[in-house]
Image (cartoon, rainbow, N blue to C red):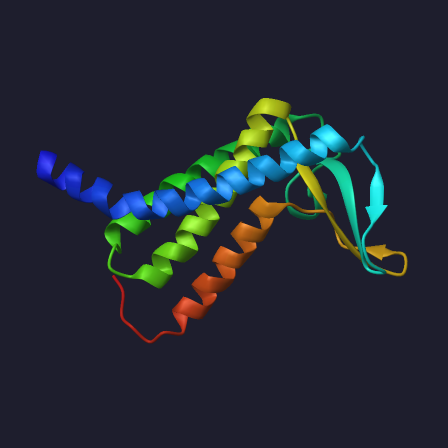
Length: 164
């Protein structure tokens, strides 16, 4: 039993490191924007991109943001489940580096947004892309890691290897 546990920890360790780096970069950028912007402040960078401080009580695209607060628990539970599932899949498929990298990115992003939900009750967003009057919902580094990891998973699914 101890040998299996050590093997699992060894399989997970490098990918937990990737997830930790994602979390730390996400945390540092959110801390910067919380410290240097006031809520709703927008600073233009280009003709299609602003830096802005936004608080999102919902999920992607502010889904369920207008509700009374119960959604925070739902999204926190989903993030915890995602972290657990990613960790289990990494341990199970330790030799598949691209697959594990994808999961580590998702895991790091999920932890970053989960941290915000637990500490603040909302997720801190600060990247705002737009065209004319149309704005993509603001997002953050954790969101980028989750989307990037999901994209890598899709690419990995075309690799042609067989998986259990």
